[in-house]
Each structure stands twice: as C-alpha cells, then as structure tokens.
Amino acid sequence: MENRRIAVLLSGRGSNFVAIHEAIERGDLEAEICCVISNRADAVGLERAREFGLDAVCLPSRGMGREEYDRLLGRTLEPFRPALVCLAGFMRIVTPVLLDAYPGRIMNIHPSLLPSFPGLHAQRQALEYGVKISGCTVHLADEGVDSGPILMQRAVEVEDGDTEETLSARILAEEHRLYWRAIALMFDRLASAT
Ligand code: GRF
Image 1 (cartoon, rainbow, N blue to C red):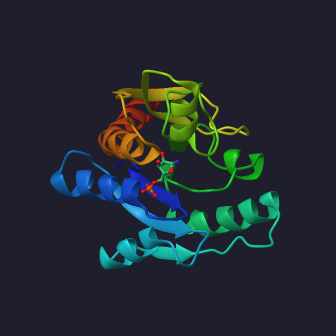
Image 2: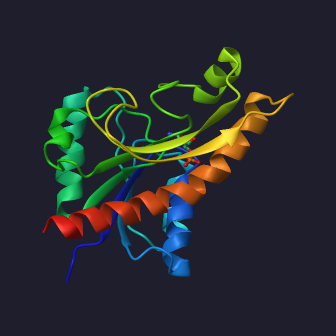
C-alpha cells in the first residue's frame, strides 16, 4: 500500500491545513494527515487539528537555532512516517537538516506568483509594486525563502481599490483550492517514479 501520509507544519490560523483536511474528507484528495506540528502553542490550527481528532504536536521553537530545531522536528516527524511534509503558514525557514531527511518531499504555499514577492507581506508587496495580477504558488521547499521548484500556481486579479485585506482574502480562497491539488500532483509524481 502506497504511503499517502502527510505531515502539516503550521504556526498560526491554519486555514490551509483545514482546506487540505476538508479535501480529504470530501474524497477529493486520497491522503491521511498523520500529524500537525506547530512551533507556537497558541496556533489556532493546532486547536483545529485536535478538534478533528488528529495528532497535534506543539514543538516550541523559541530560543532554538534553525538546525537544532530542525533536528527536533526530524525526530518528532520520524515515527509518523510522512510521505510528504506540507508547510502551511509555518513561519520558519527550514535547513538542510530537515530538507535532507525528506528530499524533494517538503512543500510550501506562498501568497504570490513566485518568483515575485517572496518573504513576508507578499500581498502588500504586490499592491505597492502595482501589479495587476498576483496569486499563489505551491512549490518544493529549499534552503531559500519561498524559492524551490514550482509545482502549481493560480492567478488572482488585483482590483481597483484593493487593500491588503481584500486582496489577501481572494488569494487565500485560491490557496485553499490549490494546495490539495498540488499534494495530489506530488503523490502522482512519487507513484510514477517508483
Ligand atoms: C497563507 O497565506 C500562506 O500562503 C502563507 O501563510 C498564510 C497561512 O495561512 N505561507 P493559514 O495559516 O493557512 O490560514
């Protein structure tokens, strides 16, 4: 039986995690969320994971170096044996310590059409630049900030009068339609590679 377990790493609201969970519940995505890990105890996403009856782990990162934290993450993930690790609003940069443990299997979602506007406040960056089209990207993680091979993207038009809030909300709605599809694509790729 093919391993279709996914681990979700988050730091906050967790709406992308909920959208992935819902896609699985609807039967649109054949997968199993094996654990949800947050580096913040107050992450709403962690609470939602508990409500869904999923394994929810709080792994505080405060005061830890990146590599030290990734070693801890790696040890925590190992018993769950995820085929994919999905970063969903996880506010830490992953290092080779984690990347090498899951080569080509760590995904991230970002609220812009990469390579434009990586980093924080991508929607604000798009508005300040004055682009007419923005969107969202799911890509494989690497050592950089929101870099790594692109898996899927969706465009969102910037409308006259858009604020950071209105544009973010329309992009987020597309993120929720995109991430589970990119996970399905990854499972297809992994299956055809074996
Ligand atoms: C999303 O906009 C995602 O693209 C970015 O962080 C935000 C997380 O939102 N990486 P949520 O926690 O999934 O609601």
